[in-house]
Length: 335
Ligand SMILES: Cc1cc2nc3c(=O)[nH]c(=O)nc-3n(C[C@H](O)[C@H](O)[C@H](O)COP(=O)(O)O)c2cc1C
Image 1: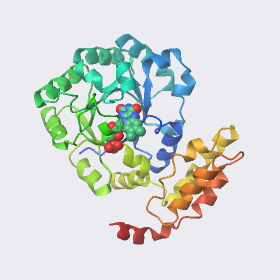
Image 2: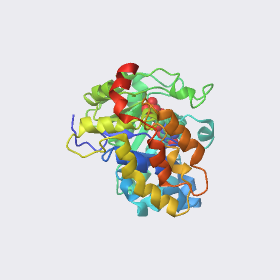
Image 3: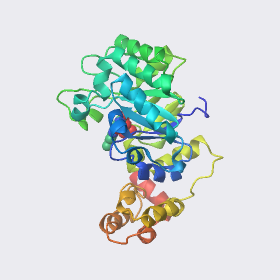
Image 4: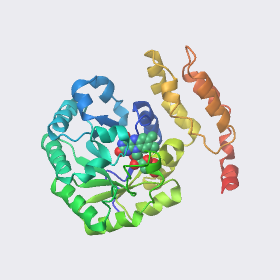
């Protein structure tokens, strides 16, 4: 598999989680990973506070902006409005099952309207200087046969999409909460493999349930790219390990503590601008997962980051609580 493919290692779009601070932090751990924004509703870009919705730190490249929307004209206008921000990719969310999202006609419910999806993607493509990609499920409600999925993906290809991210489970729009929709429908990786065989000219990025190094590396041998969501968020060091496996020549933080140190200038700038430390630290709680002192690290950050005047020094104090040299012992212990 091509190590230079742009989507070799991706971090999933996650509402309320992968905001700009989260992404800036993950960037320190994985300089070449492709990051995705939270879903941004196209209509909001047209009528809302664009700076708040679209601003990001230059270090976040390569960075994809994920849209929620179902109106070709609105999506195209949103792509144009976002162009000044110079994202590296626009992605259309066709996989999110939430009620709120359904009522606005975004996400997985759109997989029931393939012609509409094609119209959206073509309209986005027509105005976008960067690639337009789609994030899908393997099925939605009763629409989940192999033939139906192939037809759907063929339509994506006809619309000009070359890279398709597939969350390898179907979505049940009635009766399951969004959280259950990420856990209950079974993962069917083999169906995504068959898609890749069926459409050799497309690049499929495998998503869903990838949560450890061995498994991720095995999938990297069979797919052009993988996308990690929850595991990357809860155990960000995993991203650093996968990055080391993929691109051994690229320098990375040698330890978790070094990653914190490398991130301090970003934290300092944020706090100097008067913003709350907790907005950043809430995304760093999982960094020392599995190590002695990890609980104290989490507790200090959660309890003290909100205090007036809390700044980067809290991170340095909190990481004193962790013994990173114990990693080997701890790893064996958990195995
Ligand atoms: C808190 C949370 C928010 C999410 N928000 C989005 C979103 O905005 N857009 C989207 O396409 N998927 C969203 N997802 C789904 C993820 O992108 C991903 O497809 C899913 O979590 C499966 O991958 P994982 O098993 O590696 O976490 C969200 C998932 C979580 C846990």
